[in-house]
Amino acid sequence: MHLTETISSDRRSILKGLAAAAVTSLAAPATTATAMAATAMAADGLPAQPTGAAAAIATDNAYWTAVKGLYAVTPEIVNLENGFWGIMAEPVRREFIRQSDMVNYQNSYYARQRAGADFEAVRIKVAQAVGAAPEEIALTRGATEALQLLIGGYNKLKPGDSVLYTDLDYDSMQYAMNALKGRRGVDVVKFDVPEPATRQSVLDAYGRALEANPKTRLLLLTHVSHRTGLVMPVAEIARMAKAKGVDIILDAAHSWGQMDFRVGELGVDFVGFNLHKWIGAPVGVGFLYIRKDRLADIDRDMGDEDFAQDDIRSRVHTGTVNFATVLTVPAAVALHQQIGAAAKQARLRYLRDYWVSRARDFKDIEILTPDEPGLYGALTSFRLAGKTSKADNDATVAKLRDGHKILTVRRAGVAKGQCIRVTPALYNDESDLDRFVEALAVITGTKTG
Ligand SMILES: Cc1ncc(COP(=O)(O)O)c(C=O)c1O
Image 1 (cartoon, helix red, strand yellow):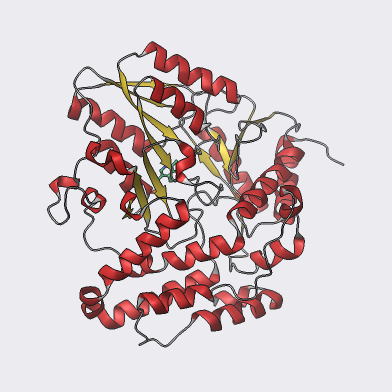
Image 2 (cartoon, rainbow, N blue to C red):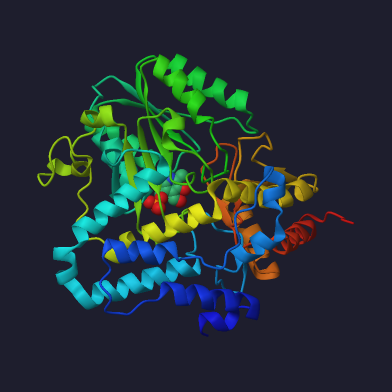
């Protein structure tokens, strides 16, 4: 079925306007100027950002209905598994198609003549948006690539040093930290984040781990846990680590775009970001950040010889990438800014609160993610009391999916047992969450109303 056949006539008319704005001639050269012009027009039809207190912004129905209208999504399922990657909004998707057509049409004529300058423009745009200097940013194919390069390239470790990470860090990054034992001769120490967590208990756990491992030189920290959605008090942990001469590599795969911040506020020198989760760029793009005066502490990628030692681009040597993916980043960033980073954060927290506040007291439900302000965003995980195995949680995910047409995902690796992650996105609304809460009531045998 064609995509637009699945959407309501209201949304169809918004999308028609957006599409007209975004589509240009197939042969139109996508110079940076034309790419930016298309970007500027990307979401004509979206009302001005709401203003006022976060609660008022988050519940401005007219605004969020218009935002929802930017997304064409399958009606087959209520998707509350938006932590994998972010669906492109229609203006971004159309820009991606336009850029794909252009690159395919022009082939190496484009790539050899103009891609270099266009990629530079993208890097500058991303740097401005995240609050960094362009020399502090290098584009990657995602957060995994960015973080592997930072962890593998960090050259200040010597045999006998320790490196730390926790149960909540992302698997691939745990693997990269484990690999440091063989590569650098360090001791790899893993500890558990408390559950339930409070700001203080998290800070205490990091404090204790640093205290107990005085040879620690490097700490892997995840801004938003993909397992439970816990948002780490990064700046406080960074202060604590810095006081002990410990560097942090921050996994910000899930945070920027879901949460409103600039990189300088975090107090960390090495960060890996995604652009294809909460910024809504096409799949296959992210970036790494290295604070300007720390570049020498990360090695060149496989001894890159294309860029100078003092050029951060020598820290990433990817090979041929999907040009259209990178060229679409400005459109995604522009839409993110047009919807509003603070407004997105407020809306996503509101959607999370909407279901958690109704389900928290249900029979046998454990919500793993605390309500404490600043410790959560869109993602929150739960488990049914005592149900900690893979099979238990797969069964609940299957009941939600097959019995109630709601998509969630099982997450493993949490010290106290497996769980189910629930992640609304901007195209979800209260009706989706009402359906989810009703499903939870049925599954747990909780009487409501
Ligand atoms: C916390 C965290 N780190 C890293 C990644 C890896 O991101 P990607 O697969 O997009 O490179 C993810 C992906 O879900 C994540 O949640």
